[in-house]
Length: 449
Image (cartoon, rainbow, N blue to C red; front, top):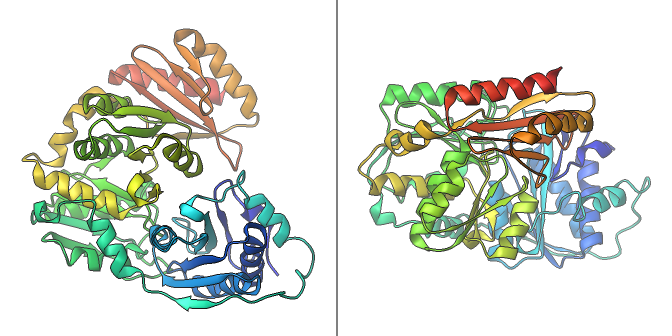
């Protein structure tokens, strides 16, 4: 049995297969989840990784033995598992996926009723303790039922409901599915649209023969950047492994940061529902709150992490939320994150505007100068946070929504510790490029000394 305690992360389960997590461990997790949360009906789905079908079967067996009725939704993107839980009013669900991690990983994303995430502070540690609790969990006391369900048709209708399909023009779009779940999810959606799609690496393949499914790493974006230029495309869209995140490349082949995507999507969503609340994370560019306010919305800053974002969305009744990391959440999608919906919204946005994406982004790129996230290993996280606070705190307002924030009139920073390793993550922005570079270097000098 392989079930290493360290596979239980802050927001999900992730580890190397089969050394850190195998089928026996998955069986224990599935059973522990049902024993602790006592759901009557749950959904289980899996991604295209080589180990995922067997891991999902083990999860189903464990949940079934603990008495749950299981809807097996098969090979789906993670957002489709969220959709299944919401659409069928289920008590929870488990997606067997390691998201954007390399091919040797396996994992799970677990949700409760309403697609609310189960994380370190909302039951995941209890599942860990129950699953690890002894050599055997004892004989099954009861057995549930198993039903196979095809949720693809209903999912396609749901995501298309977010846009005016008739407004979409025949844009030339390069799509990189990275041999991940987007290759299975997108074809029935694209069949309904007039776009001229250049579909790349659409064959689901858990060995990732072309590149790893993590578009946040520049080396994994090299293909789509060059392909957009080669095809003279209007847009490039890259998906991560389980397709719950999408990333954009403009018509010039330049990558679009998640902050600027959040701003554009917020503007579009507020056009559909004026005056709504929009949530963004503490790392984001000032472009986000400024755009929300200009569009007549209410900007609400929040700490990083899908568990915190989804809880705040429910609390505030927020229409939309965006994170710098490429997670975009929608109230009418069970407050869950989706990669397909933002891709569709961007197609609609560009279809309705006479300008290319690079021109729509020009006001952001000319005013807001951002570092992106810069990670630095440190031996004493708390000490370095205090040193940065003492050095730069007097230059602006200090807050601690998530890590350390310092906000001056013409620059601001967020410095957060990693959840899983001794790292500090810096995001800094200024309203002038040389100021951004100077403050970035000054802060990094303190962190790295």
